[in-house]
Length: 330
Image (cartoon, rainbow, N blue to C red; front, side, top):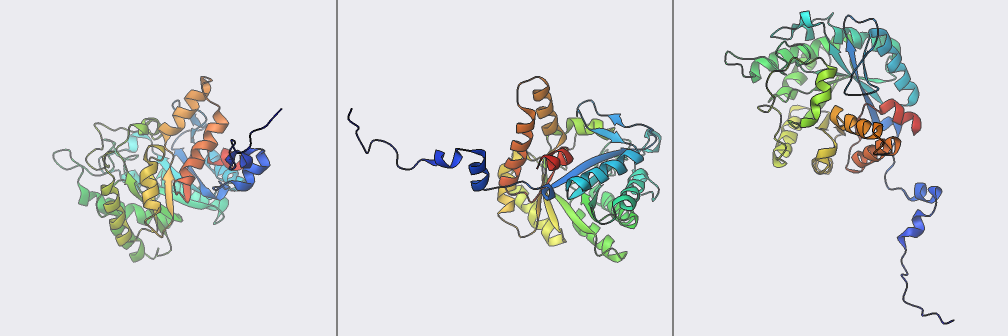
């Protein structure tokens, strides 16, 4: 039997895929538990965790179960926890005053978690009014029902101070108001909180994927947020937002959502010398969970694949509802 040499490939990339050990050795990107941040909801006035129907496995915590979740995240090696407060409906009003009440649910939750884990877990807090307003918008409305940018900034300055007083390490302004980072930085510095960092929601698109989150925070939103969140068609606008946030003093920047905007994430990660975060949001989570529940995809593999894709695109930090689970697996 004769053999004709030279007709087969000399370069065989498959040689580096032969075994799990080989694939691990040559992996170009590696997830680490310290890449992950757990978003968590705490709801006022409940005695048991309240499941969120659109986000299987995620709950609105009681104060006690939030403490437990923070400890579990810490033990798994998760880097941080991002807290969202859900007040009683009767406490919502047009100005979102529960958000600036030192004894409001978010500030109480910050103190609870700080008492439980101290400085071992980075405690972050959502700095926005949408959880606390009866109209569900991220800011104060004017006489015509539009979000008043500058009046909202005054409220954000107050929120920053009370969250910092409660002991938060990082505030996350998510309302997409022009000038929010600068106003918050000034408010923190002028009240003796120079060490509190700002994770700027620099790029936050008006996305269809926020739906389950609105159930999670008990949103009262009427209408939409397209007048202040970004248009999904725009990339150059994201770079402008980035330049403004950095000039105003952002310590870290974020892209939200993650998976539909990996190109934006990659461009921003290549452009800055500050840490870059991406938020794998509720709709992204819900899609994977729903497809897995129907037997259409391998759940565990899909979770790790999506997280790896976000890391590969340039994220130093990933906010994900799978943070503790993924960290344990890693």
